[in-house]
Amino acid sequence: MKTKIKLMQKLAIAIVLLASVTFAVQAQEALTLQRALSIAETGSPDLKLSLLNLERYQKNLEAQRAALKSRFSLQVDPVNYSKQRRFDNRVSEWYTNENFESRTLFTVAQPILITDGTVSLTNEFGWSSNNSTSSFTESEVFFNNLYLNLNQPLFTYNTLKLELKELELNFENARISYAMQYLNLERNVTEFFYNVYMAQMNLNIAKDELANTQNSYDIIKNKVEAGLAAKEEEYQAELNLATAKSTLQNSEVSFENAKDQLKLYLGMDLFEDIMILADVSVNPVPVNLDKAIENGLESRMELRQREIDVETSQFDLIRTKAQNEFRGDMNLRFGITGDNKDLGNIYQNPTKSPSVGISFNIPIFDWGERKARIAAAEAAIESQELNLNEEKKQIVVDIRQVYRNILNQLNQIELAKQNQRNAELTYEINLERYENGDLTGMDLNLYQNQLSSQKVALSQALINYKIELLNLKIQSLYDFEKDEAIIPSELYLNEDQE
Image (cartoon, rainbow, N blue to C red; front, top):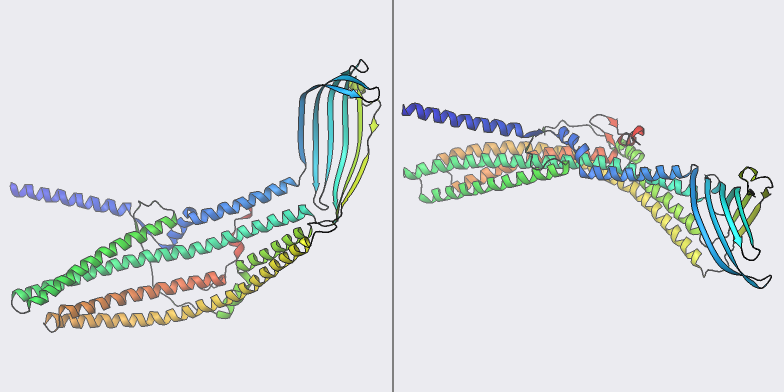
C-alpha cells in the first residue's frame, strides 16, 4: 500500500513538473531575427520618436500651405459706448460728446505667393448714435464701409516663397532621417539580437564546461580514493569545478542582461521571456566594390541632407542681405462708404475713398554691420559645401572599409573552423591522457578553455560576417544578397500617409 502511495506521489510530482515546463515553454516567445525586426518596426522607441518628428514637420508644412489660402475672419463689437468732455478750438468752448456704436467687421484676406503681397476685401457694417452739447444735435445712422486693399512689398525677397521652400526642405530632411533611422533600426536590432545569441551560446558552452569539469572531477576523485592519484589532483579538480560553476553563473547573468537590452530596444514587455532562434550559417555573397561605391554616391541620403544644409544656408544669406537694405512698401486701397438713418438707403449718397501709399526704407550708414553679417553667412555656405564634399569622400572610405572587412571575415571564418576542429581533437586526446593519469587537471582545464574559446571565436566570426554584410547594405544602399538596389523613397511613408 505504501509503495502505491509513493508511486502516486511521484506521478503527481511528475505531472506538476511537466505542466510547469509546458507553461514556461508556452510563456516564452521564440524570436527569430525577422520576427525581432517586425516587432521593432512598431514598438521601437527610437523609430517612434523619428516618426513623431516627421509628423511635426509634416504638419508645419500643411499649416504653411493652408496659410496661403484665403482667410476669412469676423470681428464683432456689439457695444462701444463713450462719453467725453472736449474743447472746441473753433469757438473756444468746452462741450460734452456722447457716442454709442455697434459694429461688425468681415474680412477676406488672400496672400499672393508670386509677389509676396496681400489682397484683402473688407466690409464694416454698424450703427452709431451720437449727440453733442456743442450743437445740441443728435445723430443716429447706419453705416457701411466696403473696400479692397492691396499691400505689396517692393525691392526685397519673397518671404512667402522662402518660408514655404524652407518648410518643404525641413520635411524632406525629416523623411530622410526617418528612412535612415529605419536602416539603423535593422542594424541595431541585428546587433542586439546576436548579442543575445552569443550570450546564449556562452551559457551553453559554460554548461558543457561544467559537465566536462564535473566528469573530470569524478574521475580524479575515484582515482584518489583508489590510491592511483595524488590528493593535490583532487584539490585542483575541485578548484576547476568551482571555477566552472562561477563561469556558468556569470554567463546566466550576462544572458539575462542581453535579453533585457534587446526587449528594451524592441519595445517589448520587459517581463516577457524570450528565446533566440538564430541561423548563423554563412553562404558567401559575391560583392562588387565599384558597384557598391557607385550606388552609394548616387543614393546615400546623407548627401541629400548636406545639399539641404547648403540650400538652408543660402536662405540665411538672403535674410541677412535683407537687413538694412533698400526696400519699399506700396499700399493701394479703393472703397465706398455709405451712411443713412434708414438701412435701406445706406448707399443713397455713397462716398468713394481711394488711397495710394508708397514708402521707402533707405539705409544710410550701419558701421559695416550688414557687410560683416553677409560675410559670415557666405562663410557658413562654404562650410556646408565643404561638408558635402567631405561626406562624399567619407562614403567612399566607409564602403571600402566594410568591403575589406567582409573579405577578412571570410578568411577568419575558415581559420576559426580549422581552429575549432583542432581544439576538439586536442581536447579529446588530452582527455584520454588525463583519464590514463598522464596529464594533470590544471593542464586539462587549459585545453577545455581553449576549446570553449574556439567555439566562441567561430560563432563570433560568423556573426561578424553577417553584420559587415548588413553594414555594406546600409553604406551602399545595395542589397548584394538579393542583388538589388534599395530605393530610399521606399523607406519613406507612402503618399497616402502623408
